Amino acid sequence: MPKEIQQAEATRCSRRRTCCLLVYGCQMNISDAERMEGQLKSIGYERIDSMEDADLILINTCCVRETAEDKVYGKIGEIKQLKRRNPELIFGITGCMAQKEGEALIKRAPHIDFVLGTNKVHELTKIVRQLEITREHVVDVMLGETELPDDVPVARGSGFSAWVPIMYGCNNFCSYCIVPYVRGRERSRRPEDVLSEVEEAVQQGYKEITLLGQNVNSYGKDHRQADFAELLARVDQVKGIRRVRFMTSHPKDLSDRVIAVMKSGEHLCEHIHLPVQYGSNRILKAMNRVYTVETYRDLVRRIRENIPQVSLTTDLIVGFPGETDTDFRETLDFLKEIRFDAAYTFIYSKRSGTPAAKMEQQVDEELKRARLQALMEVQNAVSLEINHALKDSVVEIMVEGPSKTDPSVYTGRTRTNKIVLFPHTDEKAGDFARIRITQPQTWVLKGERVSG
Ligand code: SAH
Ligand code: SF4
Ligand code: F3S
Image (tube, rainbow, N blue to C red):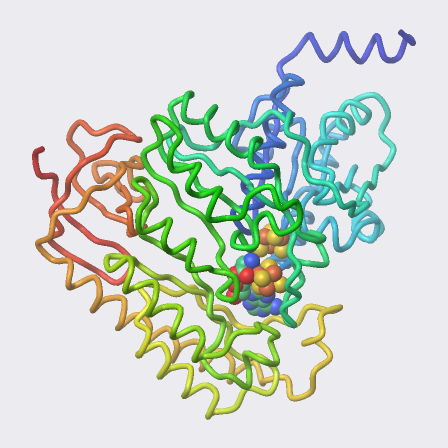
């Protein structure tokens, strides 16, 4: 072994090293970060919360909207000071912004040591080891067509609920969206690999499994070893599993077979996140969403006929180029008609490289904000009404732990994915409890434990 490597190894063994991971973006990014932490643990790093005390800082980034990128640039600026104080600090950028910007990030901020793309999560150990020895910038953002290898160690963030990616990438190219450019084409994991990860997690005590993909309903279209309905049915049968969730579903691909499996499955939770994005056909077409208001409405009808207790949540974008008052009114009416349990609402953010960024008639920022406000008001009223209907009912929740604001209050989730707050007695995270809903609110249900 060369001398400098021997020395680095000796230093490595002689003291405890710490890493701080900042994670932005969607569940896929959280899942990737769990695999990054798993790798860092395997080479002796312990995760801590404080950036100031860390030997290694990693930002797993998102670029879906400009606001997400702004947050990251803010953090990169903060870390410059830390690096000045501690030149030994290793600082890396991973995730979607790393993929999108590549080397440009290091040009802009040379205190970044490495930039690792979305398809290179499994290379983290190698790169960190290299950097422990020689501080030369590393940029590795080749967007390949492979999926993540199955033997990457994973440090799960929760002790009871596990994220399991079933596919990577996206083929849909919605005209506003950067994801396909930074995550590559759809690649499905083999069903055996998904199932063995699920089985292992359940054996380790995880009770809830969430299957992840940008568009889970197109699972298996590439390898044809199983489709999503089949995979879901097999996951439902895993011995010891208590709850199965999945996200995200593209309305164009959610099949009647999936609905039938959800109806007959025992552990498949009655919740579908079904982003509609908008409620006018003109804008849906310009967004390249492929479905219409009519086909979406029909899909919701079939879901509700088969799974009457289902809760439906959605994503919506206001201010897409060319949006008129008429389009917007249609969207408000559509929300009132469909009655989602909850909606995540976003202001359209121009992403360069996407077709929508070049469209004319970009909407004025102030108008976008006013529309967002109006949209949220309509949706909040609907959410509150739906939740009010649960008053005095008894729901089963899985306990998640103390609330962030008041540790005497615990939170949990219903099968329909609603957050429930209740006074803590002796429940532990991962327990199941029955709660009577006493005070339903727009975003949460407050209640009290009932015995049994
Ligand atoms: N694959 C998922 C989620 C992708 S990103 C899906 O198709 O539903 C999560 C959400 O971000 C999207 O549903 C969309 O509502 C929103 N989003 C994506 N691109 C955006 C943009 N350019 N501006 C604003 N919101 C955007
Ligand atoms: Fe983006 Fe559309 Fe793919 Fe979702 S389905 S990730 S919104 S391109
Ligand atoms: Fe963001 Fe990438 Fe997810 S852009 S939303 S972290 S796939």
